[in-house]
Image 1 (cartoon, rainbow, N blue to C red):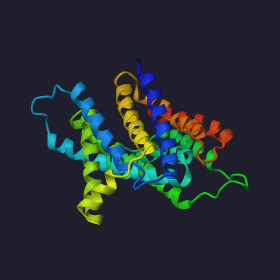
Image 2 (tube, one colour):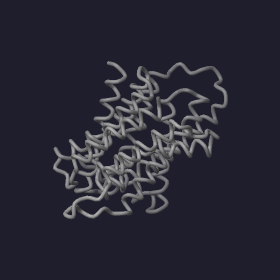
Image 3 (cartoon, rainbow, N blue to C red):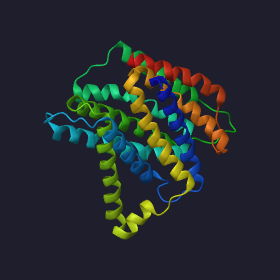
Length: 292
């Protein structure tokens, strides 16, 4: 199977996850399956690491530094970024949250400048403008009968994009030291698992905290966990044979698949299809310009 096919399957998986998060909210239990999704990510990325990255280099330089980079990236994305993405999806819907997540490359530019000293060029400005245009097309003034848009949910969506942008920058630093993406994803997922477990124990105590994380799992929570984990693994496979630009551009289609799955699941979110069909090409074009 080609990298492009893997990238398309990853977009479908992420689209399903977005819709299932919103559906799970209707029968929400605890954290709506957030912790379970992180556990599945750790299991799948760890398995992928053992299958594809078994040949470790002898005495890799600055191994501890690489693990630290991967752990911090995991806290930023798999823990905090995913949590804010879950909460944003619950409040403003899967499609809007997915479009806001597309802004991560836009926020990655100032993050790279501040952390790595990489100044944005004209390509970054053009790509960022197209991405922003796509978001504004969909988030523009809606008909008077549309449900009001919670500002708190929009803030959470923007926060998620910023956290993912920071994670991309930090993870790239780790991959420069140790180019093992599956291992990096595994370290980040384990760090995120520890974050949630320690936080739950400190807030609620050992027994109540652990029970709250693992004792309230329904069908939609399980479906979300599997879909998010499969999406991440499929993207890793895609990057083995396809360019980053192609994978990222095809990944922008996840919003379209989210809308389709939301319709099939009969979610309460109203999808503005005409605006979405204008917003998605802009998002794909902006992502492609940023990475080509």
